Amino acid sequence: DQQVKQNSPSLSVQEGRISILNCDYTNSMFDYFLWYKKYPAEGPTFLISISSIKDKNEDGRFTVFLNKSAKHLSLHIVPSQPGDSAVYFCAASAIIQGAQKLVFGQGTRLTINP
Amino acid sequence: KAGVTQTPRYLIKTRGQQVTLSCSPISGHRSVSWYQQTPGQGLQFLFEYFSETQRNKGNFPGRFSGRQFSNSRSEMNVSTLELGDSALYLCASSVGSGWRNEQFFGPGTRLTVL
Image 1 (cartoon, rainbow over the protein chains, first blue to last red):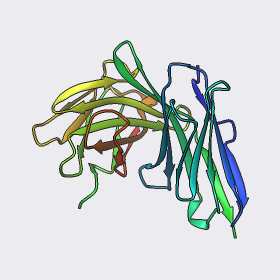
Image 2 (cartoon, rainbow over the protein chains, first blue to last red; image 1 turned 45 degrees about the horizontal axis):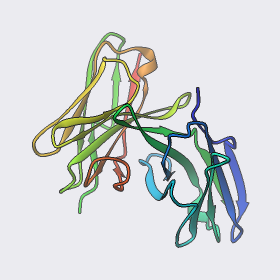
Image 3 (cartoon, chains in turn yellow, purple; image 1 turned 90 degrees about the vertical axis):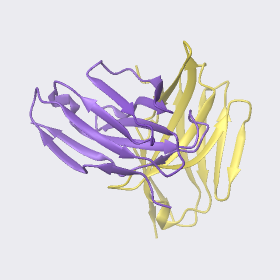
Image 4 (cartoon, rainbow over the protein chains, first blue to last red; image 1 turned 30 degrees about the vertical axis):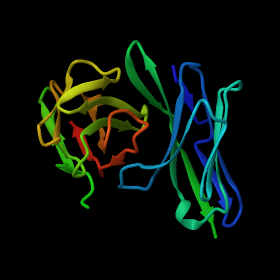
């Protein structure tokens, strides 16, 4: 049962345009969400996060939107740059039975074309 | 400041053997989390240690265990290896426990089980 889904395995965007990466979750207990970026042969890098008490969080070119009623979050990158080409993972966390759980999506490979 | 280091970077074992992976966190970080990344299951949380105590645990069998030392270095052990344990094992460190503290990942240990 995939509790966190990134339905697009890949996305191709032209440099300078907006990249929108989507993530859906099923468990309404998730209350904190994170996005990570991963280059080949490197560990993931934290990008941005959002708490369920917010619906938007912005950090430079990166903005995360959370729609709790739809159980959907998205990461917007504006403007997209070639260095943004990487695999992006969303993750959701919750405290379940006294322990913190973290569940990742399968990842979306973003390619920025010059 | 040195980043998170993991040793060894690559490892080949055979079924039934056991393996120990090591992770040295960023200086001053007291939390170390371990993750498994496979093509089929994606990124999955294994467990987190904070101040030598396991704080959180994912859904992995008891063959997967870990520990943390007083200097915050952590080891992960997998006993009775199975083919399906072939994966990239990542560790991440953070100042505090839980994912609301920014995590910094190491490059991972690539384990191949033959």
